[in-house]
Length: 377
Image 1: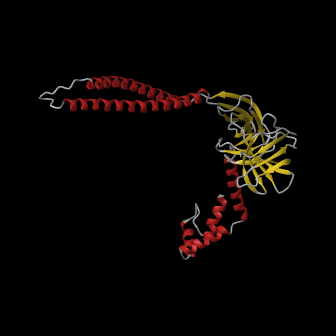
Image 2 (image 1 turned 135 degrees about the vertical axis):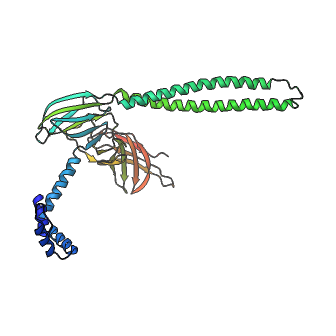
């Protein structure tokens, strides 16, 4: 690169380090103006070999690939999810953070690109000190609210007694109190207004205590187990590894499209998997298999959080069809599972000749069994 820059500067007439002043002056004399020097420099730069630009592009791609090496992938199954994380060792140690939701006994770590795993140590992470301070602050805030409730209870007793005292007074007209009924009424109204303020303050304090209790419960739940970290000794010192483990996350939710066209005696049934909106920051995939019965390399399809992914499509026989002719949709038919797999229960959208006729509950059925699907009306 330095040689390339020197060559560019030499051809452009620029001063290179170590050149003499006389040579610099001669070169300046050859170039008539600043505009000419700029044009000449631009022409020389763009006349460099194409290999130089290719080398720069390859370098940028390598940097981008290195930055993306630590990305994670989550695969949803019908009964759970598996997360895969990649790590590059630094001085022979690769670190994998295992979240609190990682299921025990599901961790697998494989070496990549000729690396060799020498040792694996699982260490439990300590709860965050900042979380402990937040929990202490919440407990202190709750104690202050309880003290306020105690003070409000005392105020309630005082103003309750004052209201009873005012209402129980016998009106006596005096020089200083020419209208005793008005005085009693004002005293009673003042006591009742104070009682109303006490009730409002107590209600707000109780609501705040409930909110704080929820935050305390969440903080304690998260602080019980902050997760684990796997420290993996590998060779060479910059070796790569991939870790996979199951997480405490629900699997995909079944959704079906059932389509009957014309007078056909079969229905086109498409199975979709609805992916939960969780595990942000991961590349998501869906597998039609179950986590317990999946093979080492199950079939997967790409997915997006909160969306449906198409998993399978079947042509199933139907019979005993009945479709109403009224304004409102009405239908009923028998559907037989002629596949070799069980179909899980879920929601289903029914289409007849391309027209949407409503959504029904699909009860699920094992292989070879039949169910009756009817409209809600």
